[in-house]
Image (cartoon, rainbow, N blue to C red; front, side, top):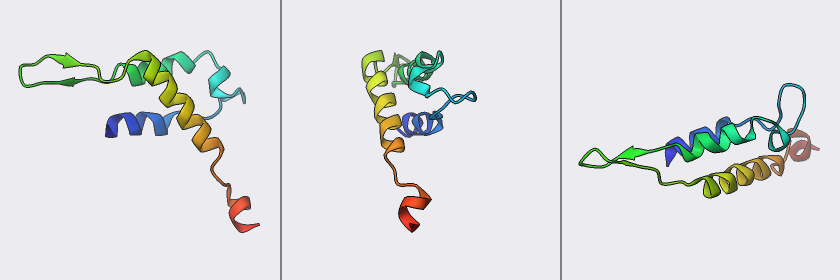
Length: 77
């Protein structure tokens, strides 16, 4: 789970040109990055605990959560 948290935290909110990441051409790349996280079991089988639907929900949730965090100006008036 920590790998999922790390990848979600690394997703930028905006592209370099200012486009919101959820409207960018790269959004699917971030979703696929989460969906492709896997682990090996004791007999070397790969398991993918997050499908693309859940990955999409997690990425949107991460973006929404970070956009709603208070800024320094909000906290210090």
